[in-house]
Image 1 (cartoon, rainbow, N blue to C red):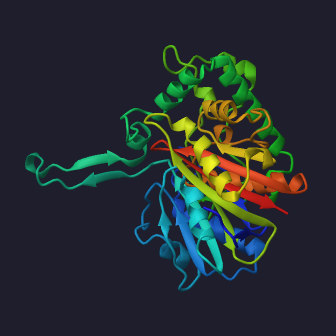
Image 2 (image 1 turned 90 degrees about the vertical axis):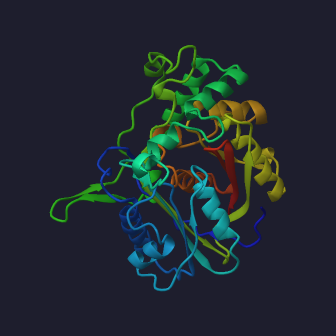
Length: 377
């Protein structure tokens, strides 16, 4: 979809650190994290009159039934309301899409999720023996069962790797490159947009001001890891880890430094999720009236290094140049906020080169892809 009047002020895009699941943020509701991180971000940036709130999350939390009005109340936004969006790993792009398509005004977009300690859902079933209910572990069952094939997501990566003819050496090399790029982000890049999370009690609060639980991924370490499946190419080092975190941004119809040009969504064949960023990117670029050659920086949500190999093979993009300053493959994947952090990094990477056009694209459960094209002045 092409957008005519959708902008993001340069400093009005932020992310919390991403915290590996079952780490120090494991017992904090993602709504609590969203309230504290968003309040701090708005206070530091200031001056925004919010007309609507778009909330994105994929893992239900206590008191999340009311969606955006719950968070609006926590933030003191009065009668502000808006949609609750849930589309697995595509939630960030879907939320920005909804905000950019909303017409005039200023919209606060908040993405938050906690994969740690996901809820165990119990569904009444009067037809079960003695009325025994059905149950579901919201996070673990979803991770392990693709809706089209019944397979885990790892199987989609191995299937696409096989069809692309990618070796473990190639997969490891891309992962090591992403680790090097992430390392470069630790020297001043993250400080401009990262908002800390406070955990612990009121008496003994602890501030998390950097990503937590990241494993170094130099090439020699990756080469020493075996593939998870026999005959496969993906090891535990060349796939992302679940995480907890929050991200947000302001979308306004008033001209600002960052212009949202277009969004795109696509689906691919069953069990071929890592392919989806390619047609999603094509859809967004088509609506923006651009080609990949017009793009200065490409950022991806890539839960598997296979994603970037496939994208580069199909589009001709330089796989080593993609994802400056790292990506979700390295710093983790808290579902809803993951894409928003990638967009924040894309904005600042473009700013640092003096402006230009950027593409964010990524895959999502259900063999879906979602993409966003932006321009930074």
